[in-house]
Each structure stands twice: as C-alpha cells, then as structure tokens.
Length: 377
Image (cartoon, rainbow, N blue to C red):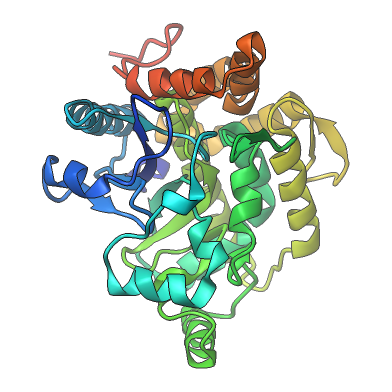
C-alpha cells in the first residue's frame, strides 16, 4: 500500500528520434507521423526528426510504466506504416545535419535565428520526469536541493555515445550538447518562487531567452504544470530504466522536501555538482562516479546502490522499495545503453547495427515488471 510518498504523483515526457527504416538515418517526417497519432498525447519538438509522448500522472510506478509502453506501441505502429522507426536514446549515430529542419512554429524559427548552430545541432532526446508539488516556493527550493543526487540518475540513462557517425568517448554526449545553452546546468538557490520568476524575467528582458520554457536547468520547477521536473537524463531505450529513474527521483523529491522544510536556508555548492555531472557524462555506469556525500570517485555500482539504499525509507513508504531495488540490480547487471551500443558496433563495425539495437529495445515494451519481481496481491 502506497504511503505519503506515493501520494506524490509522477509523470514522464519522452522524446523520441524518428528514423527512416530504409537508411537508418534520422528522418524529418514528424508532421505526417503526428497526423497519424491520437491527439493530446503526442506533440512536436524543436526538430522535425523528433516527437514527444506525454504520460498521465500516476501514483504507482507499475501504472506509469504500462502507460509509457502503451504510448510507445501507438507510436511505433503509426511510424511503421510510414516506413519509419522510433528510437528512444540521447542520440542516433546516423544523421545528416544539412537535411534537418526545425518544426514549422514561430517560436522554433526564432530559436534558429537566435541560436544558429546550437539549434541546428539540437538532434538530441531526453527523458523528463515530473513529480507533483503544488506549492511553488517549495518546488523552487526542492529543485535546488536535489541537485547533488542527479549525476547517478544521468549515469543510469546514458545512451548517446555516438555523434554524427563517431564514437565521442562519452557515455552521454547529449549532455555536452545540451550544456551549451545559456540556461543549462544545475539550478542555483532562490529565496522564493517570486525570486526565481524575477530571474526568468531578467533573462527575457536581456534577450537571452524568449520565454520561461527556455530555462534548461538539470531540474526545475516546471514551466507549465505544478511539478518539479527532472531534465538531466538521456532518453532511455528500456522502460524499466525510466520506471527506476521515476521512482528514485520521486523519493529524492520527498526526502529533500522534508529537508528544506527543516532548513529553508540550506544551499548546495554547484561546482562539485558540475564536476560530478561531467564524470557521469563521461563514464555512465561503466566507470567511477563521484560520491555525492564524500566527494571522491567510487565505482558506479557502489555509488548508485548507496543512493538506492539511502532512499529506502521514502521508497518503502511509497510501496516502491521491492520494485526499485530489483530494477536497480538488473540495470547494473545489464549496464548502460551506451555500453550496449558500443558492443553492437564493435561486432561488425556498422553503425546501422547500433540503430537496429535501439529500434529493437524501444519497440520491445510490454511491461509486466522485471522477471524477478512479483508485486504483492
């Protein structure tokens, strides 16, 4: 039975790449694909090679995962009928930048005019997780307070080792592309929601951004719904990993909500967070991560399981402990998507094999929970 933690609903926005099934390259056919999909659950993104699916909010992670699989099924089926495939990953290794186009929207066209190469190279996809907090002041405080704990979640999601046909040496090159925007990175401390809003208006007045939706912090109070929104993660080929990230992020939000209520003046140092984020971007689950408590490098599995174990009270209260602990062990045993992609490439030296792996993992989604997990009756 879910407790107080489980009363904090959680929802997900998934961004997907659209791939031509004949060439395995990115395709700019989001318009026809959107026309073929049910209205209200799918939307366009900056690039015509990308489409977004929006889950409903749920108290149970099992229900969230099932909804995500249903949305993927609709998307994959509609795409197949157009000769297209769907990829949930930070990047797709095969793309022709000169053929990419932004969506036909005045906001996106202005972004192209203002930001030039940053916009043209925004061929990346992320997973955004929303946890409901109605109070804007608390949402602003929590968005800052959770920042030291986000790099392990990024490491779990790393799925973008390739960029325009080359192995970058990073597990999440998407993160490096994303960090070029002027409002990216960890969120600083603000005294109140009003203080946060003043900062946004100052940036708009300065001409740096055009609207609140262009605040691209790793986590932020959402610009359109009453939630704290996690934005640091790559898109994940496997829905199991999304369920795991969602459960851990909700538990983090609940824990840090209690912490900021006890001490509203606590402030996180952002320089160590940036360094830890870079380390997660570089190595994913296959190297060391920076321990959020000790500030020293430790094996990724150790850092990740310490995070899981440290959230056990909140996970148990939500009824998530059994599921999350199993998902965490299976994710570590499986390794990151970045590592799986590199293994696929190394077998024959074909980037098309990497795309095929991602197409398969995105499509194979009938979520009944991990094999070793049996929910209580």
